[in-house]
Image (cartoon, rainbow, N blue to C red; front, side, top):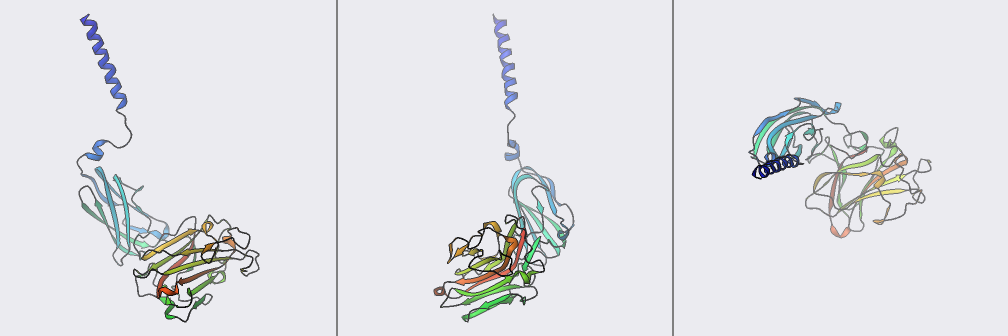
Length: 334
């Protein structure tokens, strides 16, 4: 009897042990990857010393730790205030989560020259440093409508009301997000919402106009805008006027005009992007029915207009504008 009982105990132990082996396979990281002692297993490094973003090159950073931790990579230009921030949480930094494509987090955009790179890890608040030299700048794919580098294009129409402290002109006395110039829209008008406007006709962009495909899901409109910290009353209204019948003109009575109205800009420089298919028709600030074929036709865009508005009761307003561009298959990255 005792021998039989002993055999059953041994058999049960084997079955229990086998069962334990089967259930030890779990999803997710090991506990040691989360709660173990933190050490740096591989120092912070760059994949290359020089990078030419204009040739579609990228640079990535690598490091490895004994446990999972939050980390931040901060890239700063040595010649300007341009900053790129890459953040993650892992025990490994590599090409998948640590790649820089030349884009900017904090304007201005990067120029050529040396950049300092810093890795900060939350687990021990340590910092490691590296260096990267930018030899060429990233070039967005698409059509540049206005970068203001050559001043006012004679093909544009610029209008400003005769209000107070009016400025509708090229300027360069603030940190510039791209290039050297931007467009300053500012003033106070006490009888009308309209402060001023700029029309960018297709004929002023280039021989192919805005050079858009017929697919509104492939085209993105982008502009880089700046709102001063203390001024919140400015309204930027972009209008997209289509020549549907191909007669070389836009007819407001029977052709589509879509719009993008921006009332709540963040302070500072920012990129505003929207897919052409997501533009809507507006009248007096309210959605309305388009007056033409009600189809988004970016290939028929005749004129892009930028209107700067403010409630006349709110006084002086200002918004700066730079790098107006249509991109393909995704928003602008600077």
